[in-house]
Length: 160
Image (cartoon, rainbow, N blue to C red; front, side, top):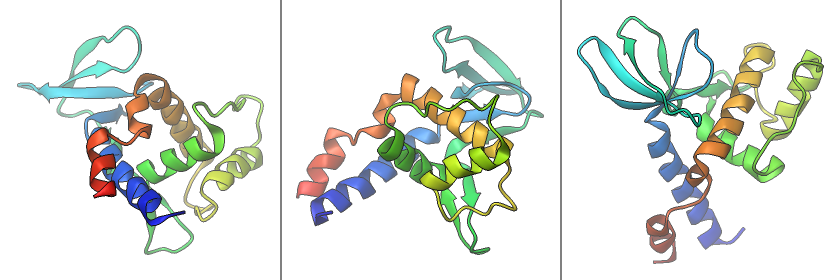
C-alpha cells in the first residue's frame, strides 16, 4: 500500500467516524437511526430505512451512538472502533455480508467475524454482538454508501 493509499484510508476513517456520530442504535428497537436534533424530552431520530419515520426518543432510552462503539480485542487495553470493522468488512465482503445467521452456529458466526477482525476477544464479544454489527454494516452499506467512499475533500488533502 502506497503512502497516498494509506493517507486516503486514514482520511476515510476520519470522515466515516464523523458520519457515524449522527447514527445510533436504540436499545429495544431494531435497525439504526439518524439523530436529527435534541428535543424537550429527549432526541428526535429518523429511521434509516425507506420509510424515514421520525420519532421522539425519551431521554431515559439507551441510545448508543455508533461512533462511540468499539469491539474488545485479545489485548485487554485495546479495542477496535466500528468504523475500522466496517471498512474491513467492505474490503472483504463488498457491499453486503451475505450470511444466514438463523441457521449458523456460534462457531460459524465467530469464524465469519474472525475473517474481518481476527484479534477480537471471543470471550467478551458475543455472537449476538457480531450479528448486530454485521446487520448494522449491511444497513449502512445500503442506506449510506458515502461512509465507504472518501470525500473529494479528504482525497485532495491526501494528495497534497
